[in-house]
Length: 126
Image 1 (spheres, rainbow, N blue to C red):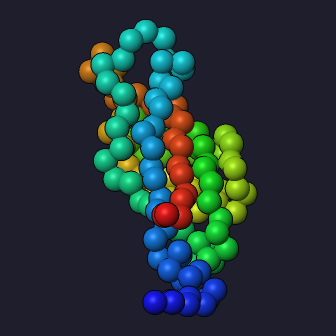
Image 2: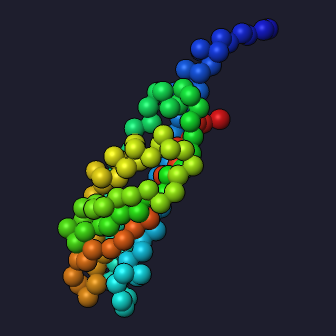
């Protein structure tokens, strides 16, 4: 049995099995807040980045590391790219992180702003 798959069909198949992996965030609140905190910021709403058909079709994979501040009200402020393996993935990652919501870090029972590093991986499934 010989099955032939055209390149167009194969590309569509590959694009359909793409994934976005939101890796655990790394709170940096200890660096900008002297003393211990009661709790680290925790994501409660995470919008996935737009991994467009064109990016998947072109086989674009990679990892974007973002830094931002989680405000005392749980919003994301000042997101920036720390590093990226693929420039074309930076914009979708930044757009998504701006929509995230957090429970803020808490120190002595009071919500505080804190800095966070968030890696996001874009992969096409095997």
